[in-house]
Image (cartoon, rainbow over all chains, first blue to last red; front, side, top):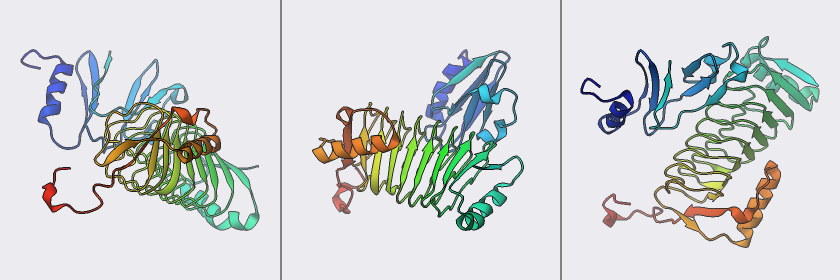
Amino acid sequence: MSQGDTLEEALQKAFAELDGFYTLLMATAGKMVLVRDAFACKPAIIAETKDYVAVSSEFRSFAHLPGIHQARLFEPVPEEIYSWNV
Amino acid sequence: MERLDLSRLSVRELNQYLHHELPKNGVEELEILNPNGLHSIAVGLTVPVRIRVLGHTGYYLAGMNQQAETTVHGNVGWSVAENMMSGIVKVKGFASECAGASAHGGLLVIEGSASSRCGISMKGVDIVVGEDVGHMSAFMAQAGHLVICGNAGASLGDSLYEAVLYLRGTIHSLGADAREEPMSESDYGTVDALLGKAGINYSSKEFKRVASARSLYHWNADAGQEY
């Protein structure tokens, strides 16, 4: 990114460099980004509401969030870049 | 109808009741409230009880199930119905990874999508998925049927043994030794019967068959680890 790549471009290049299992959650001043490795051996789940985005390894930790029963729940697909703007 | 509330009971108390009291008291139907993503709900059941779970569950829901018929009105975490022997487990929402792992029998229905490794090492269970499955589904699957009404992710059926996969949508890629084969009359019958049991309305004519090419069954010293 110091050489001018956007966060998404830098991540796309990181897929070729990184080896092993990872889930990366990154934030800049205006954006939050999530990616999983190609194998997706580690659990991950996302809850989206109009008020917040929550990321965790399992639903258990979302269970008591406000409005969770109206949230859109889904699992991030491996090597797909999910981003949210503030 | 009996109602058990996991905001008042621990999972251990619930399961001890299901294992020790239920077989004696003759209750045939019950509801589990407030699962809130807890793990190991209703594992190891051995009686033909009908259970409705109202909410999302965590890992191993209805693992090792025998005879019981459990319906989850929500999503499930990893390894739903792992090692199931018989009975039915139905999920109204989506399932996380390893759904039906190593299951020997019974029927697992996921009305939404199943994540990666669905049916990994399945050993006789029938699995019907209403939407898509993730990568490495049916990895090393040994027996039973996996019916996928949507699309499959990468490496479907890698290192398949004798389980047979039926797929309505597209395949991102087949795994090692998995191949598409023509559907026979008995395949159409199998798919129609499983869709009927699952309560999912598609025609078996829309499905294709994926099974093992059996080229990995015997060690080939000349292959040089290239398959």
